[in-house]
Length: 141
Image (cartoon, rainbow, N blue to C red):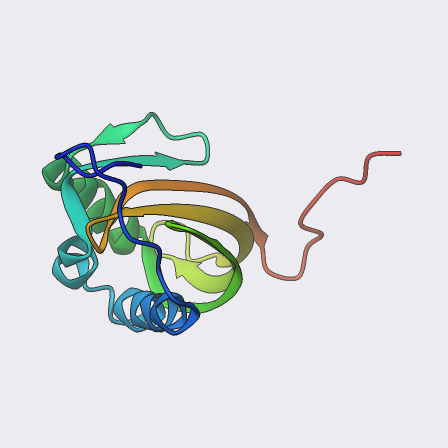
């Protein structure tokens, strides 16, 4: 990803990537939309699982607030898996209670965060979620 000037963004260090991931976990636990959005570029693009693509910080904040309204007691473990230049790859597991159904849920996913100018420019994620205590995925044989 290039900066607006056309110059490539500087690569992150491993320590910076680990600090980014730790900060994301803290903000998710607090369900702090504003803190999370502070780490996004104004023109952030979010491609989250099967949701339609989200463009821009305002739309991203609206989507995330709706998600948090649905997830009570959200707990997250996010692990840095790879760092390649300005791309941070994480794996996460989470648990929450669905605020609409009362169902206890679990989930697992991976994400790629493409950074530009020290902020997330592109957030791409895939995940599976299922009622806690039930199998999460259907085996493919």
